[in-house]
Length: 267
Image (tube, rainbow, N blue to C red; front, side):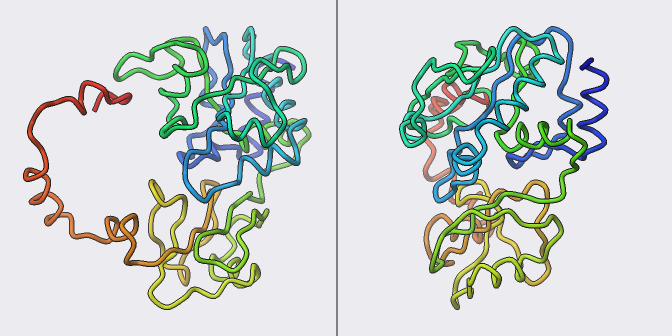
């Protein structure tokens, strides 16, 4: 299938980045791509969405990755996965997954899921500050995005989302739910009653946002619905007054600039 056909099918099916950013997948395809990296790092604590998809539908993820690779004329596709996840899935570093798609294991560290860090760990390439992965011949897609790409080529649109429901809940699990479904309804269907003093986070504890479950819906970007006590540090920080944080920051910073020098995002 030609690139323009694949791009149109992906666009028509409504495939976007399912890892949280939500960038339209068809717009990532550029000239000069030689490697497709499937991001299976899943760095956020309490999330098992990508792990579950790989556990149940690795063949379909491989199908989507191979389709993107072939359409772009790329030499290879790589599944970037942490060592502990690979072990649970029975995968080994360098293991072929069909065609030109293979496994590349990464350290069990944060933030392997950041695409700049991911590219370095899987391929040894450095994306220059302010540049996109395409500048070093790489396109990165999420596990669920690859899954959705495979569906799109069969004419199946994105109408459902894989999400983890976890945290302070009776039975953490991964579900596939309709997009635009009320968050409150999803939690109730999963047998979750939000404890008094808890909040609901759309995403993981580190990068997710606190939402009101009564007025929020599951979107194509929702990776998880995590219920956590409001008084734990990870949540208290999100609830803290921005002005207070700005006042506090100078007292904890010695202006050494080391954080800037080692930041993978060059912040």
